[in-house]
Length: 257
Image (cartoon, rainbow, N blue to C red; front, side, top):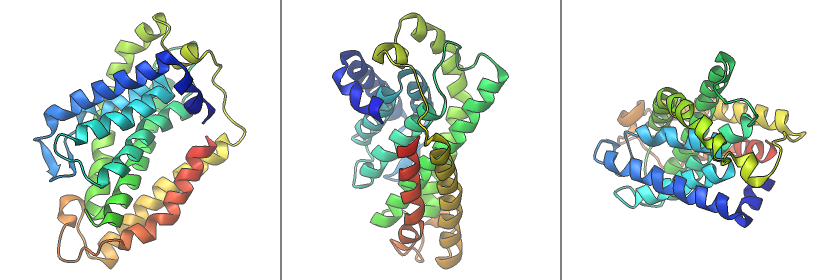
């Protein structure tokens, strides 16, 4: 978390965060008409941006992803749920940045690197969907079975396909320009002693939270999956209360990595 605080005293990091936010918003806005859940989310090929920005620009990418999503919400989906969208999209970039350390080698220099990136995509998508789905249910704007699952699917499909392509195209160029976040911040990426515990907590939170959220939605409330989750049986806050312990674990895990 120290790098996240230190970036605000570095002009280039602030500029990278602003550029990421502008690019993310610019790529989100054209797809706003392709609605998946009215007023809440749409098809998001731009979801690959947080992954790439997080790996290349570190904390600046995470901040930029959060702010870019908020800017995009001004064009059709702005509401109280945008608060959780801010946090969810931050996690979408922050988790990859913290889990995969930048080194002298390019991220996709080997098949192992590709597998690691794809695995991180799944975990970050689950964290994002869990957080926003929980918030949406808590506020009573959407059932977890609808919002949470759609976001996870959106944030896996596009980053898994487009993310490696963008990373392959940009990684070498960003390094050559000296814009990889360790170069800009003049730091050597290190994992804290609490890293393993944090990762375990994040995995438990994501798996347990998604299972619990869907179990409550499908069982207690009788909701269906995805958009069919909307219906007369939707009782705001039911899933929000049941998933809250996993959100606490998620936040603790993120702080520990």
